[in-house]
Image (cartoon, rainbow, N blue to C red; front, side):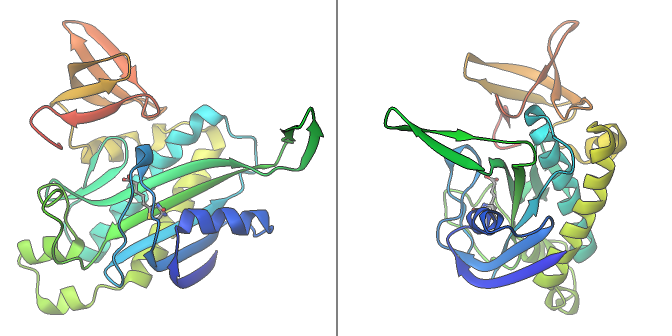
Length: 274
Ligand code: BTN
C-alpha cells in the first residue's frame, strides 16, 4: 500500500485518475485534508471541511477483467470496510443504508463513490472525431470514501441526516480521552487494510456471499418499508436483504419479490432518510 497525504486537492478520486494515467501502481491511496470539488453519488457535491473530515481514495488495478456490472459490489464491500474501521475508532455500532451510506445513530457519517475508469491506450482520428481504443488490462477502479470525523455542526438542510464520529461519541457519553484519541491517519489505514482483505476474497468469485450476513446485520432498511425511486416510476416495498450481487431484495406485494440494482434505483425510508 502506498499512502500519499495532501493538504488540499479538487477531489481525491480525480487525483487517483491523474496518478493512474501516470502509471501509479495498484493500491495507491490518496488522502487530503480538504477537497475543493468533492464529488458524491448521483452528481451531488460532497463537502470535506478542512481538518475535520477524511477524504481518501484508492487505485485498484484488477488482476482479472472484472465485469462492469460487478462494480457496485465493490461499493458494498467498501461500506463494510468503513464500518469495521469506524467501530474500532468510536466503539459505537454502525449501520448501513443500502447500498453504501454508513450511519451512526441513524445518521450518515460516511459516503462512498466507486468509479470504473479506462486508460486510453491509443487514440486515432477519423472524420474529425476521435475514437478511443481500450485494451485488456486498461481498466481500473477508483474507490473514494468520505468520513465526517470531528465535524461539530452541519448546515440546516442536512442536520437531521448527517453526523460525525465526534458528535456520535459525545451522544454516547464517551470520555474526552477517547474522543481526543481519534486519529484520522489510523482510521484511513484501517479502512484500506479492511478493504483490501475483503477485496482479495471478492476477487476469487466476484460473489458477495462471504459478507452477506455481516452486511445484512448492519442493514438499517431490513424489514422496513422503503420507497424505491426507479426512473420508470416510484413505488413502495419492504426491504428483505441483499443477494450475492449486492442488489436489494424487496417484497413488492404478496409473494411478489424482486432485486433492485444500485446503479438503477435510489432507496429511502418512507418517512425520511432511513
Ligand atoms: C456519497 O455518499 O454521495 C458519496 C460521497 C463520496 C465522497 C468521497 S470523499 C473522497 C472521494 N473524493 C470525492 O470527490 N468523492 C469521494
